[in-house]
Image (tube, rainbow, N blue to C red; front, side, top):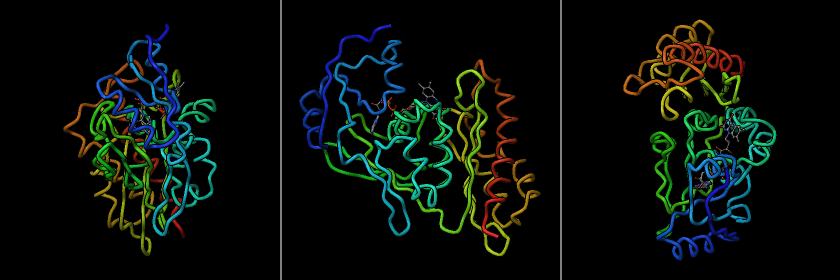
Length: 291
Ligand SMILES: Cc1cc2nc3c(=O)[nH]c(=O)nc-3n(C[C@H](O)[C@H](O)[C@H](O)COP(=O)(O)OP(=O)(O)OC[C@H]3O[C@@H](n4cnc5c(N)ncnc54)[C@H](O)[C@@H]3O)c2cc1C
């Protein structure tokens, strides 16, 4: 299918972008990042913007830099660059792992972290890593800048707390320091998207887990934390036995959400996978903890 008519603009700076937004404020606008969700939606009629603003040449949206306790990744950084970057691999290994498992090489070479998080597909891999790692999302709109904490960003099915005229500029992720983590996904055999994906970040002292963040995607309508597993892990020995018993609490804390059901998996099978992947990802994170 062909998309309906739209006008295409390239912004070269954020201020050019906001000029375009105010000029076309009454029209339906979409941002073109990697285009790997937007263009299929336009071709199938699920999105019909009047105006497409290309973000690729906005320098302020690129770059990866390390700060004292955080790592900042520009919204327009591609998955392949993020997964190969040594700063990210050292400080945010769970995100590096998650983006390395997105789609195929073409998707990873074009798709961007910012586009992925803003689109918020329930089966997208990076949101789990962002929730488990903890991050501050930097946002810019016509009225200025603001920040959103990871727990407040993913609000529903393809919904985030971004306003329509706001742009995600960079993602500031907590460095893992002396902790460890893992990301594991069960890909759908047909699409490669996750049926379930689980990210875990742990810190321990003298063999006892003192912080645990566990997040799942593909389970309910948006990325969410498995607080039952987290609570069970904190204070437990960093052993596989603890991972096994904590995973028994996998469905606690997500009772208010409806577990997804589609052609790939029934809700019952997904509930089973949530426990299995909570256990496996936690075991892998425990194995990665400094000895
Ligand atoms: C074959 C295939 C397989 C895939 N497999 C996976 C997979 O396994 N795992 C996975 O996670 N994803 C997968 N994807 C989706 C892919 O990761 C997309 O790249 C991603 O969902 C969107 O990122 P993008 O940069 O392509 O954004 P685009 O498609 O360009 O934009 C998506 C949406 O986000 C908005 N947007 C973009 N950037 C910003 C910004 N900075 N601020 C505010 N809004 C913005 C746009 O307006 C648009 O509405 C797959 C896609 C394809 C085509």
